[in-house]
Image 1: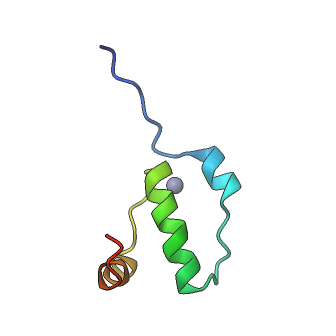
Image 2: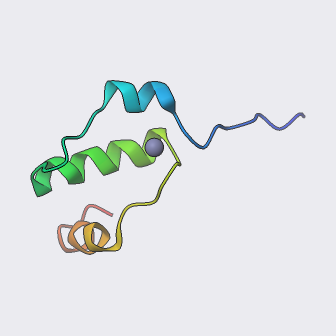
Image 3: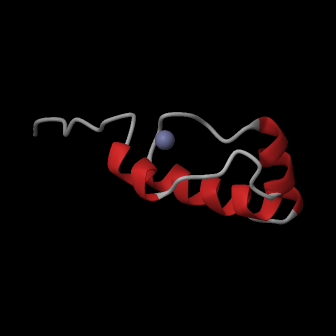
Amino acid sequence: MPRAPKPRLNREWHLAHRMPPRAPLDQRIVWHLEHRENCACRPIPLKLLGVLRERGLL
Ligand SMILES: [Zn+2]
């Protein structure tokens, strides 16, 4: 079985999911959860990971 190449950056997803620079925390959380499912260009920031754990979202 040939390994399916998985692009690190999902350009189409990013174009469809722009996040404003000063997005509120809740919006950032939703964005990163969706981002994690669709793209691997960068991990969830540690600060946000802490919040996700507190809220039981991980
Ligand atoms: Zn990405």
